[in-house]
Length: 100
Image (cartoon, rainbow, N blue to C red; front, side, top):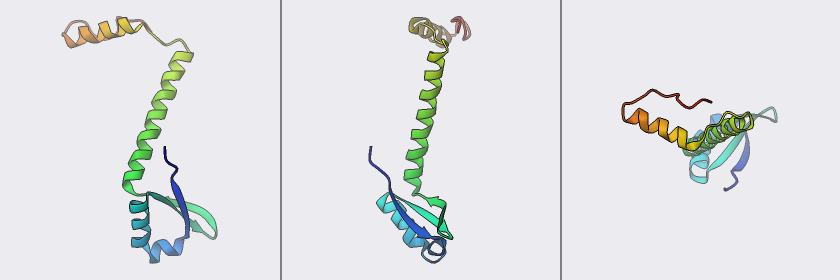
């Protein structure tokens, strides 16, 4: 995984040099940190990088939920789960013959 480069720019640059900042975000895959009175205020990312970051966060959340299920014993044998899915797809029983 590659590290996201960051650049810090004052808020006046966002107003006066938007196209340059936009190009910097899109073409260089950089995060531009916008400051107000010398303190971080906002981060600008290219849309593609935003989508990649959002996807990674969503995956991490799913993995954390799965780990929580394992840690708390909310698991079922894989065979039972696949049997339930096959029955549903065949139009048989409804979901839930496996007890969680």
